[in-house]
Image (cartoon, rainbow, N blue to C red; front, side, top):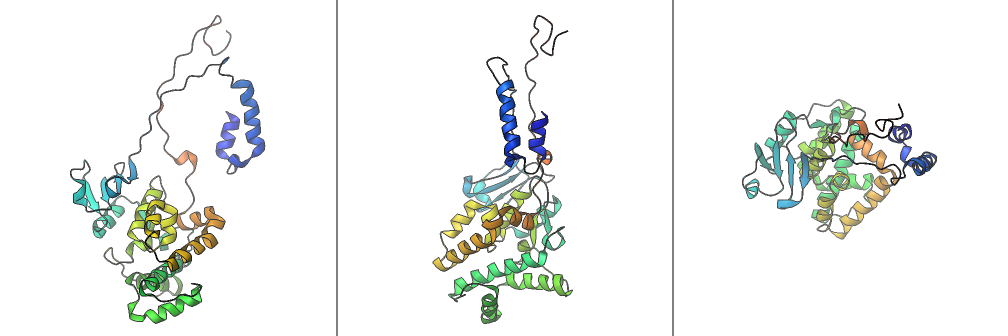
Length: 293
C-alpha cells in the first residue's frame, strides 16, 4: 500500500523505474492469485458531463447547478431532451450567461499565474493568419514581423475578433480603457478559459468551437473538431499550423497546457467511483482471514 501511495503521490512516480521495479518484485511474492485469491468488487462508473459525436456533436452537462445540452447543429434537431435548457452554438448570449451562472469559465486576463498578454498576442496571430488566408494574402514565414505587415494591409478589413483582443491587450499592457466586450462581440469567447475543476477540459473543448480561429486550443482540446477543420484549410494554412504546433507545442506539451489552462488537477481531486461492498472474509481454522487468534 505504501508503494502504491508513493506511485500516486510523487509527481514523476510513473517514470521512476526503481519504484516500478520494486512494486513488480513485491507483486511476485504477494500477487499469486492461485494461493491468495482476490475478489474484485463490482464498480459503477458514471459520466454526467461529457461530449458526444452523436447527433452532429452535443455537449451534455447534467452535474451542474443549471443543467444544459449544447448542440453543434440546430438545437431543434435534437428533439425532446430530458435537460432543462437546450442550446446550440449560435446562442452566444445564452451560453455566456449559462457559463457564468455555473461558474465554469473565467476571463484569461484574471486567471491566476497566466501570461495573459502572451496568450492574447498568440490568439491575435492565429486570427490574422486565418484572415490573410481567406483573402489570399501571403504571410511569408508567418513570424510576428510579417504578421504586422498583414495587419497593416488589412486595415479596415481587420476582423472584429482581432480588434477586440487588441483593445484588451492595450488594457493589459498599457492601462488603456477597459474594452466593452459583451457576449455578442465576436471576440468574447476568445477571452475566456475553463475554470479549474472537473469540467475544465470539457469547457475548454466547448470554447474551442466558439472561438474556432484559435487553432492551438482547438488542437489541444478537441482533436475531432481540429481535423475536421484542417481538411478544409488551404495548403498554406495547413503548413503554417503544422509548423507552429511542431515548433511551439510539441516540444513542451505539458508546459504549454499549463500556461494556457492552468495546472492539471491532482488524482485526489478527481471524482472516484463508488465501489460495492466486497465479499465477506471467509473463516478458517483460526477464525477470520484477518490473522491467527
